Length: 362
Image (cartoon, rainbow, N blue to C red; front, side, top):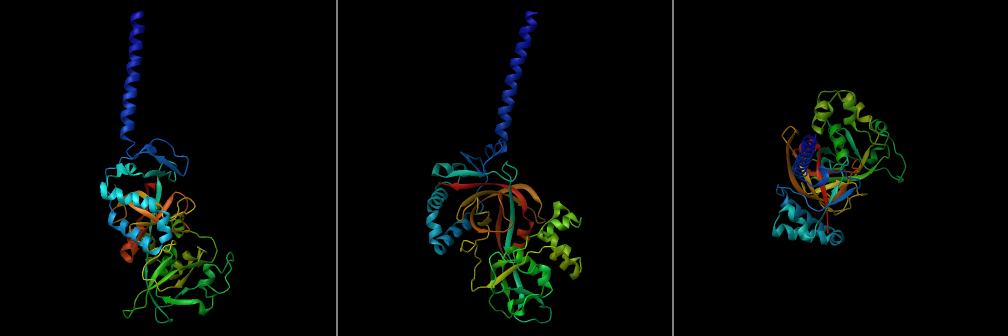
């Protein structure tokens, strides 16, 4: 009996030791980005002492250019964040090793993500180029509107369906495009360059106001109706759907989104965010400024996609600056600016994925 008891005790001890070794080994292999993979994050941001990332920074050139844009166009914003900007610049000159950021006085505050386990929603936006005419002619029949006079802050203006039917006066029309779809996309993106043809310089139409009706996602409607699978939804698949349907069907879909955006004509030659700083593609993001402030720097682990927008299970590391906001950008979600024109649109349209992000502070 004594020998059996001793043997049983020894087996128990051995089991505990093996369990401990396995647990430590397993944990070390699964916290490559810090404790976020192991522990639930409760606050918007959690201070992480160290992260282990082997990837190199992919957008150093774009990031440095974005900082220069901030310095030249918004000195106050630059001075407000100069401490973190200088710390990052010193780090870039000395090592570029992401795991040594904390050696330069940089604190890593991890975003908790939409699931409280670090998975941050990542989407993309861009600046479309819209062909248009100052007057209504041939195919140029779709109005782009400026904000009506005497518009009060919280007043509800006509909803989209009424505007499409021509309820607004012609004096509020800035231009006519040849595509209702292009107009709708420009509203979603918040701005656009207008191409009047004849080699004239592009004119930048910036966001002015909304009509104060609630926004409804046409993507969600198409998913609910079984028109597009949730796993395939993107700007590209929505455009494909539009090509396969009549103008009346397209308009009926768009009208389900009562929200409507008004624009204003500007003399700007670059794309500006809400922080009044020109945006650099691949180095700036729109954020929810109730939790991320203008000028904040984000270290982001971005999922890489193939030419069809499919995640290839690889990531790249970017330094991004919060310089814009968006009506649909809420909480643990940011919208990356991808640039101007069709190619940027394809790239931006594919992004509806999840990555990881850390706010950098000194």
